Image (cartoon, rainbow, N blue to C red; front, side, top):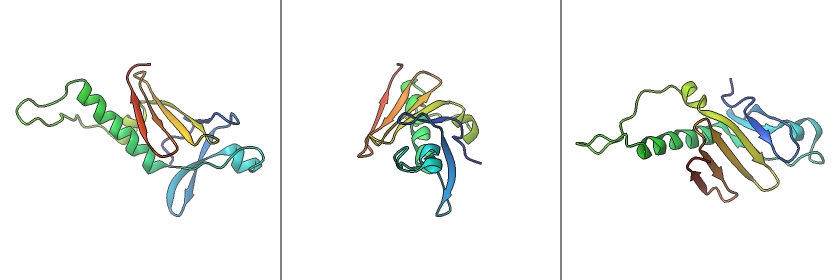
Length: 126
């Protein structure tokens, strides 16, 4: 099972990204590139583990911004959440292979943007 199936869209060719196994790791690649080759779309792979890490980090950041911190221990109060529940907070992911960037849009109207040098930017409500 690929967590982000049907949520990732290629901005260059308009096709969806599809899940695949690469060296025993789950990854996503543009179905336009996969089906029609490099003349149709550029190859740009995203690892599922990297996407999950970003979504978890966004969740932690959101808890901090909402003030979910224990006053005595100064630790984040984290309610139990499953990976599936966390994934359901993701509305969509838009990818630009030509720019090597992607943006994760969340259902709470916030987003996370990743640049070519893997710098991450978070935004508040859009």
